[in-house]
Length: 200
Image (tube, rainbow, N blue to C red):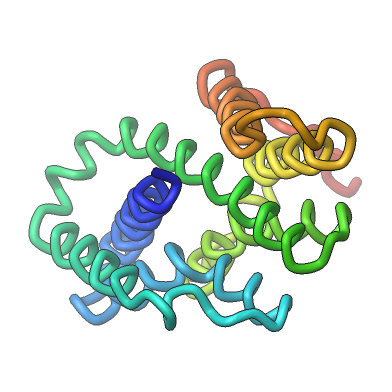
């Protein structure tokens, strides 16, 4: 089940990357590249840092899903943009899945709660950072929006359950729910982190 949810999250992240490419007026190749960066960038960085086999090398279906998302967006970008609000929520689901999955894999490989939380956040947000840098935008996670904070909350929830309540059922599901609740609240009520006032 988690595998199919993960594939769905990759597809949604790929759509968001392809939409960013559309806003920049890129061609189909650009759509595909930005979709790739967005959808698998975080997981790739995680696996390289952990010296683990890169997940999409072992299972190329991820690449085909991303290519499909890029082509769909290239053909129907205007239609997709009309439901972009729905994609924001789909993106929140992907974020929630990835933060828990990243933390789970890191904890399994290292046994370190700190590394697990860090890799959970990296898995969830690094693809978006790469996308925004390539598209010459300030990364979303470096602005006020509650995004990486939600991923941190989800990853930390997973680790706390594994360390303090190892018999707790469905820690990944609980972590995803926490992340989604934080991110969803930010979307609904416009929550953001405080920032320092401009220089005088």
